[in-house]
Length: 392
Ligand SMILES: *Cc1c(COP(=O)(O)O)cnc(C)c1O
Image (cartoon, rainbow, N blue to C red):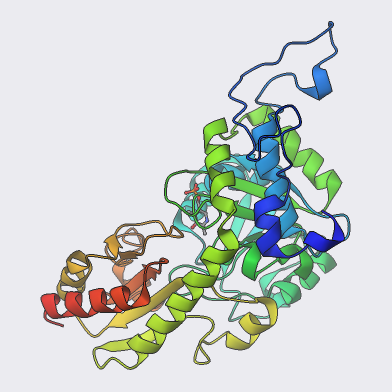
């Protein structure tokens, strides 16, 4: 992008989204085609052969994400889009070979953990899981590590890993570093500028932002790494549908302004919850009481809309509370314009044994909220009435 359009608010709307040259259409058209006519044998027009390999709508979305993640990188970034965040994760893992060793955060997204332990472990890749916030980078990443998988902030306790320190250690041992940047988005955190080799997103969440598409992407500043990811994208074929790319392009236009509101609502709700006599701990990285507040302040310019808080209540009362919410929808997932609420112990993290859950801090009264962009007064009124209805 040109020098005068390097701000994220502008890039979200214009990055990679040129006016269509034939008609002047302002919005990138839906190129809903599987194949392209070739003027002569072996001479595809402008390189377009087949939509698994090349599609202009998908390319516009890829360029838009690149413009945001790579806005402060000389030479920019490169993005490959996939049919889901999980498919994006798998594409990165396909770079590895049997015998390679991976170090992953111990509280990564459950689907990521499942893919590592139930799919790629069977293919001979070795995984170890560590709490990057409680050991040194040297202890966390031993010699011989091929890849480091970080998620920051994590879910549901919003732990923050020191990306620069871990990337520096990974560089010493020659390991690739991947950061799942789904929660922070490039609006608030740009891991490639902190030394990460790859960023992965579930674009299902904030990037699309409207809870109507499942998608994912892999981003890197290294053209050679992108060539390898593109080869995997084309040869394993987990590409997104074209309408989904178009919807995500529509969604990304408001990413910056949405993140601003998600954050201001989250901050106001955190302040209200902290004052509430029936609420115990509240987790939000922008709060000075957060254990990694200092690292978070250094590597993030904002903290988004994810919060967790502990109700002074047993599981049954916490379940009644979640069910009684009316503006907050009781649902898994996150990152949409609408506020969602869930109970990790009974929902997203129910597969973790109860004693392990307690040990890592996921108590029965722990509530996770994806704070949407509704009016804050309505959100606080909703939580208030739901507590009363649940007898908390
Ligand atoms: C949802 C999510 C994923 C998986 O993405 P899907 O699009 O659901 O496949 C990965 N990482 C994080 C942090 C997520 O929230």
